[in-house]
Image 1 (spheres, rainbow, N blue to C red):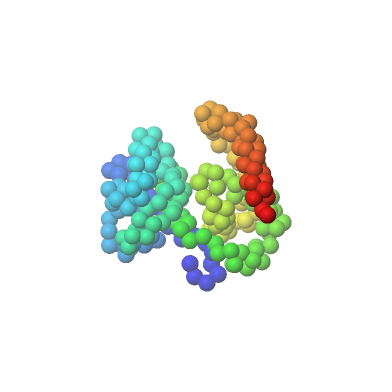
Image 2 (image 1 turned 60 degrees about the vertical axis):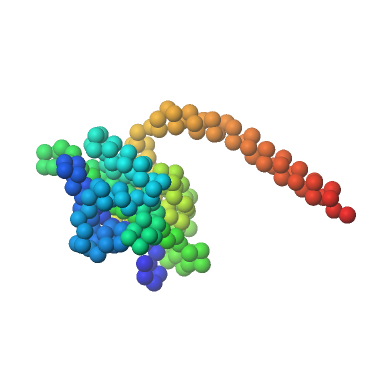
Length: 226
């Protein structure tokens, strides 16, 4: 990123299921530490760069994409040729041939390794006055991205801003439509909803426990003062 450009580093890819053939844009090659055209991406090469703690997860996602014909989307870490760890999300959709058959998946690597600096937030806010006019819907969209991709608030905002600039759609308009079309997604599996139900109905217990513990600490400290 150069100067005041706060967009994340983004590169595109395509993955054909038959033969497991990959195609990386120059940006994705550079993310991994390679000069464009110097290496032919393969599934083996891709997995060799994944963080050891995330490699099995990515392998499972690839296997699922190959067997189900769904897109390869993920949030994970990989290590480039210099040993630098990158935090990325992969946003993708299915590829179709002329007959409408699914032949692979294509999308973007979004490198969120470098987060927005707090001291530059004021400049960003001044450049995007619509942020204040539609803060509620933008915050909602950020929350969705944070939950789906397991990223923080700054990273979620950068993803929204990237899509806004990439598509030439105002940030607030993009966020509002994203929220409006959430109902088109399939419902969460029963196990997820059940887990959330439990969280919703018991979260107050942990809050009360923490408040009680804090109060006990304060009393202990107060009693120990001369």
